[in-house]
Image 1 (tube, rainbow, N blue to C red):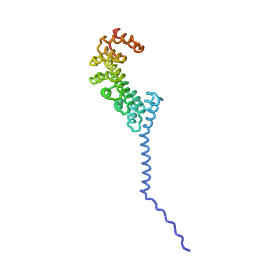
Image 2: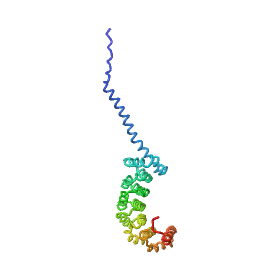
Image 3: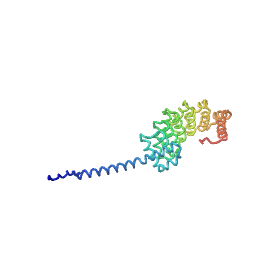
Image 4: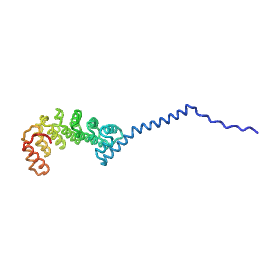
Length: 273
């Protein structure tokens, strides 16, 4: 009988190959953990913003879900720079930042240049919330937006925010004076109101406000009349304009004009409400 041939032995993998496999597996696990550590908070942030955008959570609750003021600012800033974010989520982020104090100001200023007009408008609106904390950079950014943004809603909220802040910088007053002739009525109203809130610091706008007393929009006339009194301290021609409005057919504006007249004729010291 012929001897039976032994089957060929399988070559064993060298030790370095085994170690390479183990190291590769460990590297994959570590990278997965790092990605989860980075993307986990981002996914949670996106979920919180989506819930707020859908009206399912309040601003303060959303801020607290994100860890409080400073953590919320950091997480919203990071999330808004991701390419996958939606305009609705960024708008919610801008709204939540209005409850995050001074730490949110740099992010809100960045969002004034967002490609979505709704995000820009919300950022401007949010900048008017923490007025005691607003820095000069915010005033400069809002002034620029008021002068240059193509969307009237953004300009409207920029004017309102500048009035809430109340800092009568020369360029800001000039931008508000120019906005008194904006083609959109809501921009004109807010510009007149903003000048009035700045008081005597906006005296350069008095002549422009006198022209606005003849605006076709009655609410613009009302805001201009009150602003002129707040800036100059002189009752005329504001009282005459307000009396006409108080005797007009529009009950809403008539009621407000009567209240304004009571303030002026009662000898109240001019000061924004």
